[in-house]
Image (cartoon, rainbow, N blue to C red; front, side, top):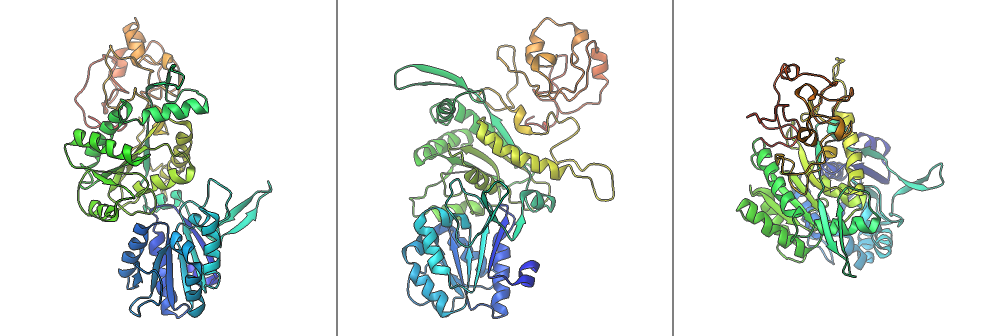
Length: 506
């Protein structure tokens, strides 16, 4: 606000992470411009019908009346402006151009990257709002998977000769996290053995997360997301258990499953209904009551909602705290927007959990957010040399990136290991064979004196620096801590403890 009021630019691009308050900023600025008679009316352009109604409701709360049902003709005098979609502008660009020419107009372009979705949309926005007095562009993801130019966005050429968008103000995930505006996100990656049959009739077996060709990764991914397989039911069951744990601190916390298509969404809802015994909200774009279902889910305390793309961008449901990324869309733009549904914070100390399949591209996207999260949460306190740890990270945390250790067999990480189950081990800092606390090592004939780590480095599973020859007595002398299947005591017995910091299961 200060920069805008000081510079008074005609075009302004604000890039802010999802959940950081772009709507609040834009409407506050609109109110200031209307009050100082810089503009006489406001036009908000949103990607979807639901979002334009959401804008109108938010504007009404600060005294700005927007007509979300506007289609043509003059606007009623009781309104300060209109809320439309990019598709609506694409159909009748000259209508909006005439409105901008007749009165001084502020145009708010929400999620401006959508103006490049098609050449016709971009050209229509350029034609319709070129005469506007002020243009405010907003986005949480200032990039596209293609090279379509975005109207009213400045591009600067880098040293490599590639032009990139240039923002007037940027408020990233790290900044919002440091200010307590958004929640830290914990990614839980799930692997599993997949089998499918090719068109030629050959049966192929593979494991998510292992090196494969691009085609094999895609086929294994689609196999994992099949409602008739084992992966989805196990992951949904684990996600529901996680939601139960979250609800102990956030009583109205909800979960969202993002599906690939409508058929899969309906099948996922049936699985969740069997797991929870409660009704599941299914939001589909071709249903007239889709927006009402989202509003109803926002206000009630039901557990789960399943959607395809209706809730993937811009939709404000602050109580969403657990998510399942069950779609094959692998663009960074869609992933960032989908994760953005879970970061909206209402009070300090809240965290969000997102379950993802062990797909290299998704793990890379998650890693970028994890690095920024770790950098912010581990910064020193003001006036102190001590570190400020994450609410879910302690000195006994296995690894800085939580998704690296969550790779069970298409099942939830809270399943306890038994000698009849195979295991890939739990160490990532050192090889599994080097740690004597892994399930594989416990099955081997090792003496009680060699139960400690046989590698002098720190084991990422048990977070202890151990050397060969450590006795059980030395291990028992350590202070007690929460126990789960990743950090079972050397005796092989289970302890009745509080919730585990790793997977939030008892």
